[in-house]
Image 1 (tube, rainbow, N blue to C red):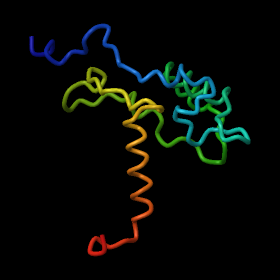
Image 2 (image 1 turned 180 degrees about the vertical axis):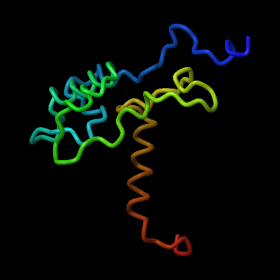
Image 3 (image 1 turned 90 degrees about the horizontal axis):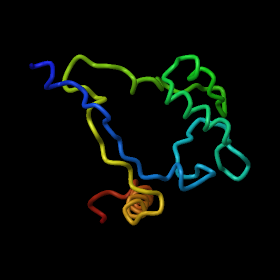
Image 4 (image 1 turned 90 degrees about the vertical axis):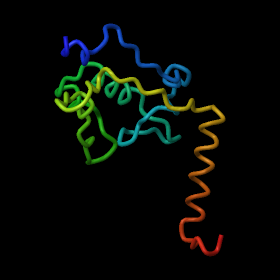
Length: 126
């Protein structure tokens, strides 16, 4: 009975913000370390390889992801690990990130820009 309390629910859905489908050039999707085109957009074949690896979980697929430089992704399979402490991480749901074109995302990036501008200003001079 206790084991059932911690089991992963069947058909658990993880919500998305739909940015991956909304922007065909993947401009709102994670692409750090992947090769990019001259206009700054990710190479779609490299992005597809990343998605394939994430969906399959196979080490060979992760090793096949084309990278934009000499460095590899750092521990890209960490999210596939199973920890014996606490609840099953695969059974937890996290809200999706703010959509790329949302007011929340605009507010967050504005705050980041302000922090960058004010990083060397002492609190006493605010």
